Image (cartoon, rainbow, N blue to C red; front, side):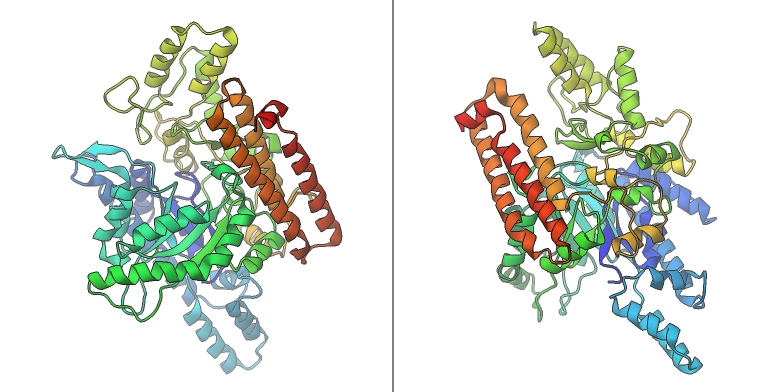
Amino acid sequence: MSHTFHIPVLGLAYSVDTPVKVARYGISSVVSIVDDILIEKMRQFYTEKNNEPFIPIDAKEEDFRSKRITGYLNLINKIVDSQFRKLKAEPFGPGTDITRYFELLPETSPLKIKYRTMLLETDPDKQHRLQEELREEMVKGEIQVNIMAKVDRMNPDLKGEQISDALGALKGFAESSLNSAVVLSAGMNPRLYSYLENFPDFLPNQFSHFNKTIILKVSDFRSALIQAKFLAKKGLWVSEFRIESGLNCGGHAFATEGYLLGPILEEFKEKRQEMIQELYGIYAKALEEKGIRLNLIPELKISVQGGIGTADENNFLMNHYNLDATGWGSPFLLVPEATNVDEETLELISTATKDDFYISGSSPLGIPFNNFRKSTAERQRIERIEKGRPGSPCVKKFLSSNTEFTDQPICTASREYQNLKLKQLEAEGLSPEEYQTKFEEITEKLCLCEGLAAPALLKNNIIKPKESKAVAICPGPNLAYFSGKFSLDEMVSHIYGKLNLLNDPNRPNLFVNELNLYVDYLKKDISKQIQEMNDKKVKYISKFKEQLQNGIEYYKQLVPKITDQTEVYRKKMLNELQEIEETLNNLNPVVSQEI
């Protein structure tokens, strides 16, 4: 692995073609394969850009969703391979891509050290030999794909049989030419996990190498182990646990009942070897039943993402918790050469403040969602309400799951659902205040299918006149600490500590930032529940508070171990933890007394 970081999935469109932009430099990134309509448009765009004939895959074709995804991934793989071959053949010298490849590497990388040695070599023959060795050791970044396990709408195929969106996406990846990983996120889907068994590429050879690997995006140790055991029993190995902060991340936010990132990482660190042995015991037995015997335990990596803002934080996480990599997502939205952000949205997020980012109820999935107040999609949503036409036309239907009013599932962000729900609300005879609260909850839902796909179409000038130009964007709150637009070189230099792009020198530590998010989340939850408090809710709040308090105690013990920072930094962190603890203890006295 050339780099110690990856670029996680960013919405539907923001990282849909990021590998074409960064993989040749050894940087791995993750592509969403939820939206086959967007993927087909991007396949057409890149096919025609390469002056090749485009043959569309019609929605009336058998298994069209899988075929579109396979076709796009094969094309992206082909483009990246071609880019990488050309890069490797370039001469070393100023301005070449091969030089940029090595200059982007971290200073501690063995490859970077050899590169520096080559530059200092004065003997032409020795220098040439070192250059050839460097070419041989170069590695391109992985083209990884993400499947959100809970986005799993059922669809009738041409024969009238029901097929699942998530299974179709997995098949598209499994039948592609990629040798890379599928990232399974947003919880366990037994049907999807079982379907993995159908594809031999997920099985190892005798040396425990895989053509395709499985990464689980997880938010706590217990759920990670449960999911990994389920897969191991089927002869499927998890090659990486990608731990993500519950709230200090982009996209959907999962509050994990108050479990904080530091204690979660500590548990993975302490139990890592024990977990590997336990999983391997189950895995080896399942493989034997398939007639496969291994000589080695396969590799199991652990990485973390969500809210990392400085090289010092990055290095501390890597070293203290023995991690294999970190993920840097939202900051790359400010890097136009790496991601798809349309000009208007880029301008808005590059000048945004902390208050512009918030956890909302905008997602039709009913999961808290990191939102941006100034997005054009939010503007459009409000305009529709003001015109008396709340909700969106539902074109793609990927998030259609509600059957409250209809036999066929519809989306809660759709105009159809919101009209029906608001009619029901009017008949309830609520007070004006209660009505307004419910009204806002119903109409807060955003069309994410269109909003998260639009930026790629806008940036590449392939949007059609009748298509929605309203852009939804879901950065993590950490983006507030970055202002401006940056080059790929600048952002990578920031990650490795050669440059500082933060707009606030007093930015709190990422653990403190996450803790504040959790306390704010709990405050809002208590204020929502206070009128209808019952034993079950009291117990939930009590457990949540207890986990946060445990986390604060853990961080107090951790602070002295952050030795790469000054005493002033550590003292400031302890003071911030003390303030948060006092806030937590004073949260809603009525509820606290009940607890």
